[in-house]
Amino acid sequence: METGKFKNRFIAYLLLAPTLIILAVFLYYPMLQTFKLSAYQVAFLGLKQKFVGLQNYIKILTDDFYFRVGFTNLVLIVVTNILKTVTVPLLVAELIFNLRNAVHRYI
Image (cartoon, rainbow, N blue to C red):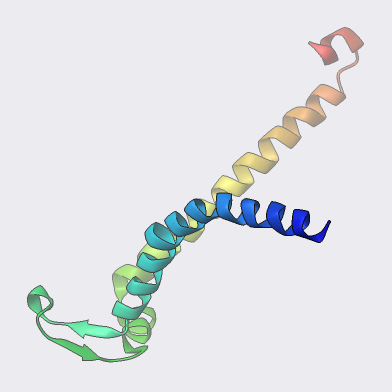
């Protein structure tokens, strides 16, 4: 009985393997490589790299005007989209609920 369970699990993992390999190659590896490269200061054409650690992130968060403006715009867009997608349907549902005629409620 134990060999049947092992065989079923092995087949399940074998069927999952292509998906996990594709995820690793096309999603996780580029993400990790990008994070690794963000710790370097790269010269023109990438011929010369200097390790700077988290200095690039500190520079963006403290000195970059365009990042600050873009981040502010992003927060504004997210907040307005949340308000739009939550308040408008709730308001319409409340208005429908308060209709006096039951026939009109279900239309």
